Image 1: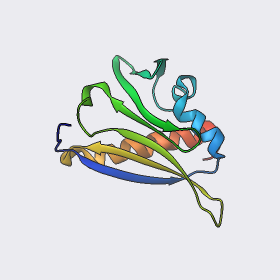
Image 2: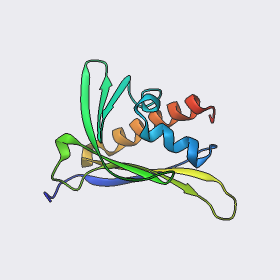
Image 3: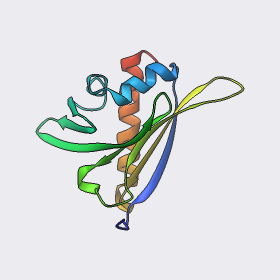
Length: 130
């Protein structure tokens, strides 16, 4: 594993949706392109994310249905960097939260947080949980 200068970021978003439905929006290319990117293709465990003229590929590192999915950008292969969507359900209230983990350079932390705030806002609109 190559060490990186990137900092791990943890973000939490309350979301009014069932874990089953929510998981589909992270794991299916057809659902990811409704909120995460302009277009998403998947072939096996490799997903291609397209934003305008930009294209990035990520590999699914691991997942547990209705709990989490972890991707790693192909350009980050060999590092400990990844991005993950994890669904958390409060045992007492049954409130659902989405936990996002990502990595960013020190000078890009605010920009990365803003990116996720915008993307999750888009997700909430898409699933009617805004």
